[in-house]
Length: 270
Image (cartoon, rainbow, N blue to C red; front, side, top):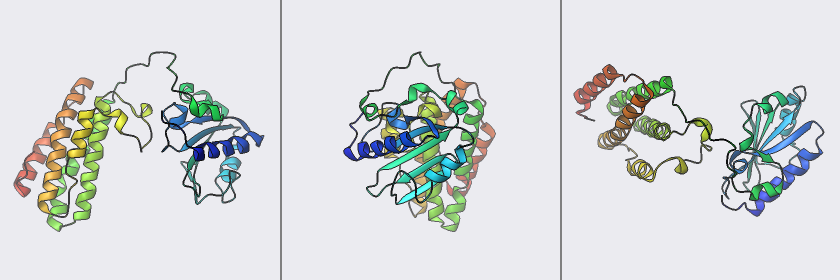
């Protein structure tokens, strides 16, 4: 874990002060990347606050309002109805997740730490028990593969209309699907990953290099075709192997139809 910055410490000290004085909050915990002992200078400060169900809407409304007790912000919003997400003037970020005692009892305590400044300095503690091996969902894998092939099959639409922005978005969807499939192949379930801003730790060096080297796509037929070919060349073999290990059924008819379609319309082979 990288060292916390002084501004992160100042923010956490403010959260400790405010939440500690709020009698509605039964307990508060450092969560997110710092809670798992994996935070660094780029991490936001995540806190889980336990409140009675009757106090829940009031706390969310108060802490997520323009006059939040935490202090001045330049952005504050409530996400998923439970998470108050804020950005302060120095661009330090914090999230407060409000949960009921019943909801809190079902949470993984190995990913939580007492809400103290000292908790920022603790290295990640080993899990008390060996985690069960991750088993990918066959339905999720099959769905991801079908969607990858569907997005590829729509490439002629973007090229035919010269909708290059749409084409670039399609390449982004394919790249995201590839990274997700790499996570699955590596045995990393969604609950085991960090936030959306952390990817490197869950890929092998070879996987990361391959994704980084794949073309981004651009405003031309040639650039779009090159990006789709490269991503398909990485995704499909990995997906086939991962799905086979999970015991799923490969959508061969869809793959064959997509290959024939792209060959016929764009002379694209993958």
